[in-house]
Length: 228
Image (cartoon, rainbow, N blue to C red; front, side, top):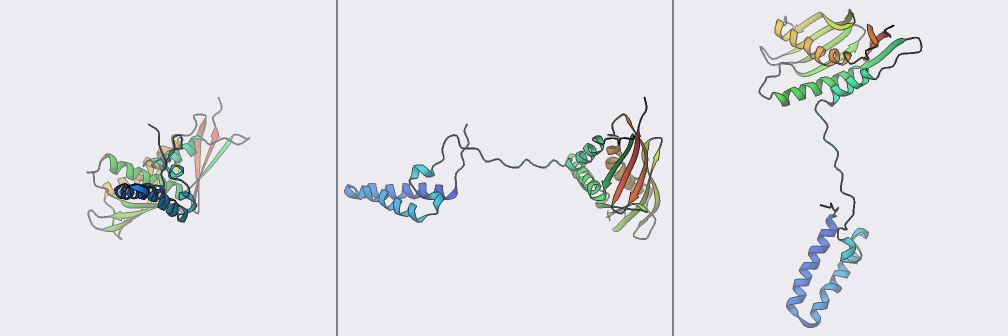
């Protein structure tokens, strides 16, 4: 089935033509020619895209269909982060450097949380509005908590590489100034493991992860080519 692109003004012209045609047919005689004359007068008064004959404004076969933008997948942020890591290329000396911004990680976290809510709408989200910030001190994760009490969560992590695997060590944590229950702290760590940690698993197989360099708003991965 062919698709047509119809403007609002074209539709109005066609409807007006039908109304005038009905009016003219009921009067008979010369009155039957008046609708066409009146329609031409109306068409000339409309904007350029509606001027001319009715046929000019009717949808024509072969016109390109209107292309709607594709919906953004809920996991697109995470997929972008994985693709960024997978596409890393070594330098001429065999070293590897890849910089990720906290904005990119936040996008991945939001996408991952949205995907989880879609797949399991009945499951309660422990940390709402999670947000990470990179600095020379480490990775600061904040978020809103409603259970067991309404408060703001704040956890500072230090990223480190152990046997080529990225891990996160808790430096300090608080929940509205109070200690954080162990299950909630585990959820905070999982927020990083399920996004940044999983993205690191997409490094090319010939590249080993050596270390992490933290900066203001940036996290730089250092690595090297595995010698065969």
